[in-house]
Image (cartoon, rainbow, N blue to C red; front, side, top):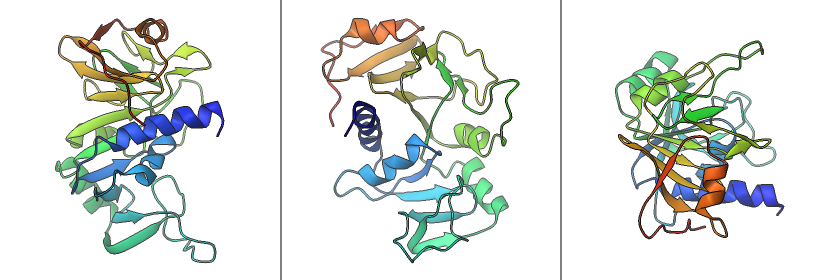
Length: 220
């Protein structure tokens, strides 16, 4: 496993620890989808896909693929026993009605106020926002799972510069450097990655960080 893969595994395993037995969970495309493979032992959650089903299962085995069963990112998936399919209106009624406990998304930028920008860069062609705007407002808890920087450029800012997906909706940010909680008085570093210093985390972050006492180390 190379260094980047280890970083990504640390992120998704830490995010998975935030999920509680019985939660309805929506995972964004990319890195967040990996959370489904890292649930703690004994924890069962119901994964929801905004394109119209609950009971999202793992990728099908070779020869068992059904081209009609895909998640919102068009990846081939399966439906577990007890799962259900429905139309888009019902899917978004679940989301907007507050029935999703946790949504996990990636980000282009996130700031100290809990603002999230994750859907477009001006001047670049994008396929659309998808369900991110609804999920960030409708879900009870919003977790951002992402790498801390993009080619060395910090992604955690004092104020987002890109068009917002949601304003003041992010609750928790998990990166390969640490876990940050958005609180009314700012951004708090509540866990730090192994072999990492607070100074290193702050240097990669453009928002000021407050640090909890006896800062714990992120567990794999």
